[in-house]
Length: 207
Image (cartoon, rainbow, N blue to C red):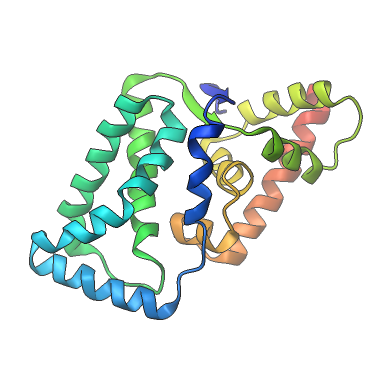
């Protein structure tokens, strides 16, 4: 159960630009970036262009999950430190380099909340929350449905909450979610469908 969940609606204006990163990356671009990564594997000084390219995206990813600029900076610094330390183990697998960074960031955020035992933040905008309600086909009083859904979200496992967060609250395509979680796109779709079915049952049980 994801009992230490804190739903936040206060960061919407700060995270709008994050959606611009959710775009398809061409094979040519990924191959070119792989050459940059290989150069950085040989000489850490060449990691700088990758850092400059992805720092803002990773910072926003972390900030949406912590709601604290200082914590986000600290965690983000740790993400890129880990990335540099592990860069020699990175292998190109046909997905953007950013997916690897997001994976490290997700692990570092989870570690932060395990260490501090503070509330994990999930940032929700009104329209994305409405989309999720539509997805589970819930009709009736909106406020009652909203409260029921918030309770259902708190009852999800963390891994399930991550899927809902990326798919609905961050509006990421299944391909990007699959790349970040290191699973297939079809698996990401199946997992999301099963989580939505679980949420429907929880909402009915919660009344």
